[in-house]
Image (cartoon, rainbow, N blue to C red; front, side, top):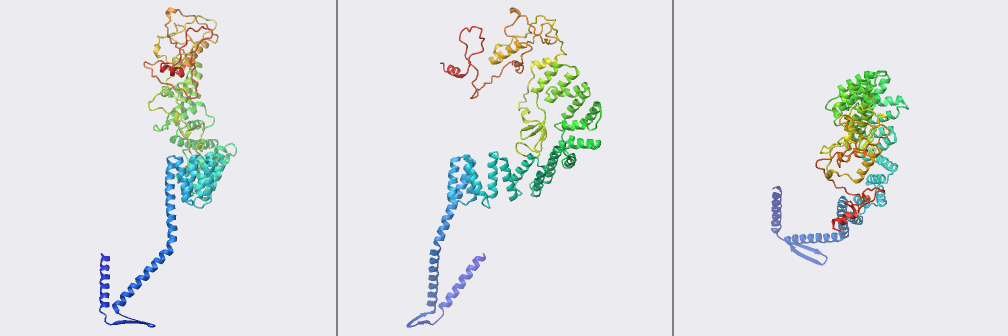
Length: 595
């Protein structure tokens, strides 16, 4: 609205001025040398305006001609820059979806149209990496390190190439240079911290951790936890060399990270040696409430030197009573009680606490039961059965980091170099599937575990022994390969495990070390397809026949020669007829086409 009012005012002033000029009377005479010009005042004003407009027009034309080369150069530069940006954009998109040829073509266009653009250098380096040309990628990254704006990016690229070439020393050198340029660089600090921890330079690792805190890369809580981890690692390393420094380090670590299991165990050990039993027990109890662990239970049992096994059992029972039920590791309390009860010869107590876990035992539960059978009754057979069951049982929790399972705690993951990566948890490989399938125990294990203590047979009582047979199995359910059958047959011939028919229903008979030749059974009393109760070792891992067996096709590996087409034969037996070829290989292929 204001602009309209101003425009109307200007038009009114111009009209008033024109009217005033037109109303002026008289003539205007211009004399220059011998020239004389006479005109009216309005004509003079009009000629003056035309002259001014001509001067402005001529000046504009001259200025445009003068600036024409610069404008042409600028337009050409802008056009090349636009083409370069277009090539960079589409080149990065080509790298994103893995089109090597298209990325190479756009990288060449970007170098031609925008050679000084940082993104053109990045596109060139990444296209070389995508092609696998490491020499070219390293050359471009070195060129990037010579520029101020791309120096850190070039160091990052050289660091990645050094990692791909397994040059750990070169990678750490590049990371240290990057830290000098930018202390807030996350990847550089992570790499240097992991390298110093792997080398055992705990002082240097603590300095990097302090630098990360000052640069704002980690918060205060993470800093306290990671510092406690590094101090614990230094204390564990110096425990046997410099106990004073180790004690000082672990005491600071337990203040920063009171739930860290190795810190609590080592701190409790130092406190126990200093006769501070109550303080050591408090440290272990605090860590146990957060993360029940067998090392904590063992340290709690031996926190007071000179106690008897029954006193240690009572102390472990006290610790297990404090285990929170909502913790996933509450079973550790029961296992600790069982361990202490075995040491105290309280086998009934050990069986009582292990009874809820016998249906689906873990390896530690099975091994504890094997130790109970071996120690209490001297039953080697049942102990071996539990040991065999432990081999096939689920895994217990272990120190795990990034898929790597370690037998001891470590401060840094050996896979990624991540600090405080190890957690006490069940490895992923032993977790149950979605269908909840479990490994069924074999008939041999069940027979051995259900049988009473065995009776040994002396060599004097050599009597003919007949194999125990069960109901005939359907022939259609025998899906085992011929090799397995042959191995089972050979295993039964090498180690016969037959029992008399009269004692088969009561208890199994273990044959003495001296072999006993079994008497051949009558032909009319033996079914054609009998399954012995005690199978050979090759057949132990095979489950019994199912009512409706699931047929799973087996595909040969490319470099697997497969099974011989001819079945197993005896070299001393005359072959009658042509042996039937297996349904596989070239014969199976031609047989499908009717050849």
